[in-house]
Length: 181
Image 1 (cartoon, rainbow, N blue to C red):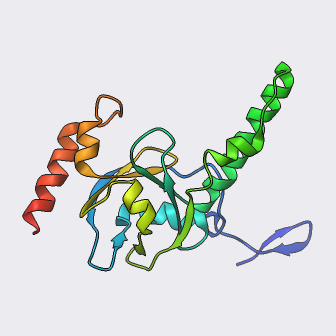
Image 2 (cartoon, rainbow, N blue to C red; image 1 turned 180 degrees about the vertical axis):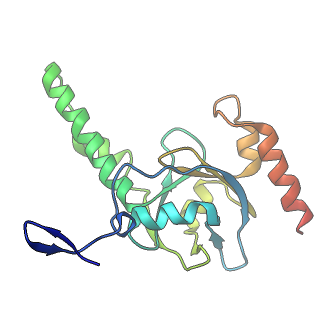
């Protein structure tokens, strides 16, 4: 059904048809296993926002700036990152400071890869990201708001003093993953 504005028919568009930057919140946690072909599946509870924020099945995956893990998000987050860099540049100029936008981007973008995933969330995990993330068999997905992290479960347990995470949650997922094997 069309809506009318000023005597003209205006097509209705559902909000989820658009990739709207800044409105996606990734939450929850789960364990996923890397298969023999080096593939991994994005858990179902993360897929809807990931698909919506990319306007399709694209996962942006790279290294986390501060933690020993990988970070994932949809394409709209790349726009947000560029906007953040621009804001930092404007603030530096207003203060009379110098700011190198290229250097800021170089700290973030080189490791990020745009990966396609299928309807079940399965994607090929690039070997260099697997190595950098220290990911072996099981991978802990951890939603943290505008992004989600992919952790080696043991690395995350060893890092809980630096990373705010409930150890009991990680231990529960490790225990459940062990039961499935």
